[in-house]
Structure formats: C-alpha cells, structure tokens
Amino acid sequence: QVQLVESGGGVVQPGRSLRLSCAASGFTFSNYGMHWVRQAPGKGLEWVAVIWYDGSDKYYADSVKGRFTISRDNSKNTLYLQMNSLRAEDTALYYCTGFDMWGQGTVVTVSS
Amino acid sequence: DVVMTQSPLSLPVTLGQPASISCRSSQSLVHSDGNTYLSWFQQRPGQSPRRLIYKVSNRDSGVPDRFSGSGSGTDFTLKISRVEAEDVGVYYCMQDTHRPPWTFGQGTKVEIK
Image 1 (cartoon, chains in turn red, orange):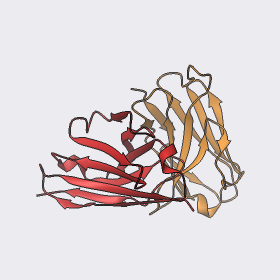
Image 2: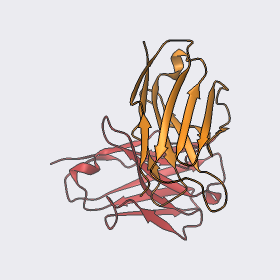
Image 3: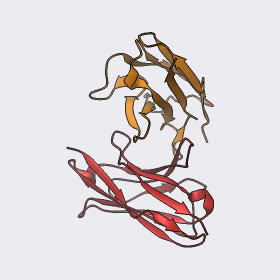
Image 4: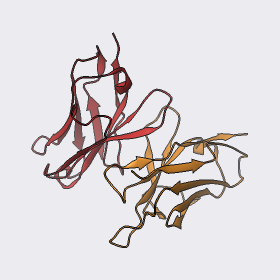
C-alpha cells in the first residue's frame, strides 16, 4: 500500500528555519521524482519544489528560491524540505507528492 | 510561466445531473514529445488532493468512469456524467508540459444544490 507520511511542521517565528520530512513506503521511491506542494489556509494548491528520482536535478518556485532546499535519501525512502528565512506567507499545509500519490500534509505556521 | 484558468470557480449541481469544469492554459500544452500533460485533481473537504485524470483523458486507477477528461491545445474539460454526493469538493487542473514550474488552476468548488 502506497504511503507518504509528512512530519516536521509546527509554529515558527519569521526568519527561522524548519525541516520537513516525508517517509515513503509501498512503492519504489528511488524510481520517482518527488514534489512538495503547499496550500495556504483557504487557498488553492501551489507547487513548491521538485527533485529528480536520483537527486540529480532540483527546481523551485520563485517564491521559495534561495530559501528552501529539497533533498532526498533513497536509502531511507525519505524526502526532505529545508525551509530557511521563513515568512508569514509560507504558512500553509505542505504536501509531499508524486502527483499520483499524496501524503496527508504537515502544517507550517510562521508567526511571531 | 503557464497560467491555468478554470471556470466556473463555483459549481452548484443537482445530484444525478452532469457537471462540467473548464480549464484553459495561457499557451498550448502539447509537449515536444507529442503528449499533452494536463491532469485533474479532486480535493474532498478535509482531505488531501487525489489525481483523477492524467494526460488529458486517462483515468487513474480506482477513479469511477463517471469522470472523464477531454480537450486539446489550450482548452480542457473535466466532466462528471452524474454527480454523486461524494463528488463534493474542489477540483484543480494542473499542467506539467512547460515546467518548471508546475502550475495549477485556481480550483472549482463543486457543491450540491
């Protein structure tokens, strides 16, 4: 059974950092490009970042470029999102996804 | 970046009746490999998104056949042949032809009249 389980969300002050994780199971993680997609409260879906199946390529939305870093550890079947210099507008539910599968999301709240 | 525009943004429907959602892209979604990478997602209240359709018209595993996708170029449609109560939620189109970035439509909220 395919499963993606995000963790690491929480409440953080502006300017601080947070690291999200996504544990994958039930499929061959190392064969899949993986994305982070976020959803601000009451808003639509916003693509954040992608990493190729082998980690060889990464791309970011302009809104997070230079602040967020996506990475993966295929030996641990885990996807990461390192979020630095967080802003209030980064407040959202963050999903780990391959688009044909989605996690339940982890909530990030940036507030002083 | 490719802009995806959905209409309507709100769609009240009667149970058992058909429903249709439009998605237009700011440029053609035909990829150089000949495929058109347009997907549809359903997000039920309080749930994560779920992909229904990929490459315009291919239904994902387990998706009821009352859902169908069509279109070409810049104009795409998601149709529900007979709306059921479990179809309530927000529907998004997404393009992954001209990426990065991957871009979503604003979402269409389907509710029962």
